[in-house]
Length: 507
Image (cartoon, rainbow, N blue to C red; front, top):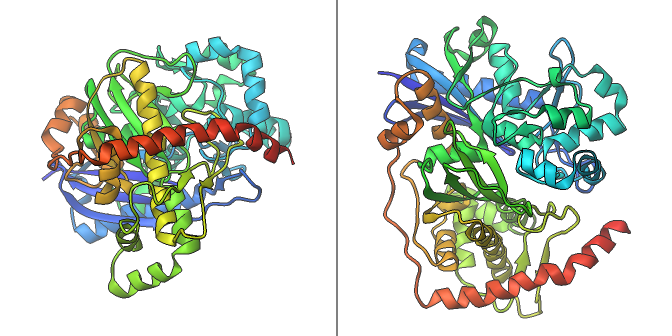
């Protein structure tokens, strides 16, 4: 039997899953690590935490499964996007990674736009200058920590640092590189024009591959650390959302998914590149060679629910622990006690600023309509509904771009909630399905590894062999107009608060 490994490097932890070639889970292990927020709007992590979590989870699943490591045909890595990893000439980490949700780089985004030109930047990178993207982080280090920048010999993305530790190779692939603001997205290569205008040495950047391509093999040193066989292939892998697309079978025109993880994403595949000239959604190369995807991003989707859980649901966490269930299971039941609209309470999920459709690093979360009659259950449901409305914002933008969506899949932690899926179905007014496998990104990069190893002839064929869908969850007819009314009210709130957010940030 042949096996494949998928490593999913997330924000809260790294999950490694061992699959057989039919996509069945053989073993799984997750290890969490901290997020450092020294200032308001900052977010950093330790790259060595990622490496240790990846190495230890790989070792754990191989040990638990008892499979012969020589039967593991390949490994793929999915990673949180946009993070900046800086290494010196000896491969040592120079500073903590500034990760995707960090919002410190507004001035650097202005600098990028001035140097490249707003329209030209979108033409080349398919996106406006954004605080979350990697290029502005590079400039921030250069502007604020020049002594560190002077020592930098290699710039990597989070998953590509783990790749380096596994193989010794400096490599990335097109889907993750698309989020750096340095890639020529239409032509799938580094942009010499952008690099020159930003005065970034191209030699700092790794080689770019397509996602299923082999980028290297497991080194002798990494083999001892992980339990893998030296020489096992490692493929390009993908950014987390591109990996999730493969893991849910969204690899052909008309297919789309909604992810509610730490961030929230509405993602649609397209064989023909489509770029929003207003920059409200992001166009990236996808994990299918020669194709792209368009996606809208909510910064604080599942993060909003986790924030609420950690600060207001201590009793639920304690009760869940005693019952041996996930606290989110109890929170779902409690949210269902509140009606649609949460007794006229709305929530804006802008805990970490926002990307789609507002592109505003200064906006922040808010409850609107809070009164003495509201309960914790109303607030809990309002958080879930607010995240759902933010996903609907992305769908509306995609419609204006002519991107076709014939059906919607739900994935991520939020996608496992029947209540949240029903909110999506009712708010989108379309059927929402889930895949049988809950492994999303890990399964996606395992399929990519299978293509690289020659087990599947293409990404699409690998998905057809492996991906199985559950029955659709249809919208409830009488719920649709109720959600529509609250969504329309939701869309009026950001414009009303925009100037207040800017003033608050300036205090």
